[in-house]
Length: 184
Image 1: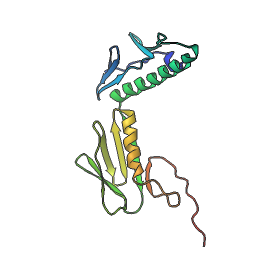
Image 2 (image 1 turned 90 degrees about the vertical axis):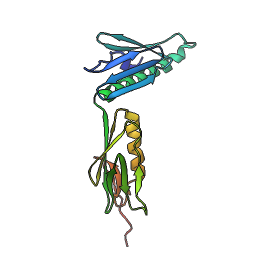
Image 3 (image 1 turned 60 degrees about the vertical axis):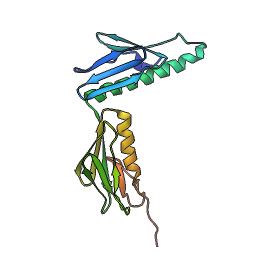
């Protein structure tokens, strides 16, 4: 059995969860998120929190018990991320290292100058907000953890850090191990 499902998921103040047959809706101060409930999972809302229970209705073999337990644990993690997202939100910070590399905002869009012949314009998906505190610091924030991480990874992909000089886009606090270049 998944350890994540042994304890209830406690809701912070200001967060409401609505459970239907196949849909869970989480509302909070930052917004609203919806997710389909897995077939192997049953949700029960009580006073002390939300309980995730395994559905053993479709159990054909006993060996499928492990798969059902894994799906319950996965759904518990997804539900916790939704609750944190609508109450606090998620944020990824990136830093740009390199001479002449810089970022700026143009409306809601992010404009990156990364040494290419043209500037790169990144349009944020719905629910994502870019912040540029300095020309070399970018912050991506939103309420969906997976989308925030994916947008940050897509920005980083425009200029992956070079292992010889360390120039490129990296997550804040990320350490790039540099190699020694050619010796003459």
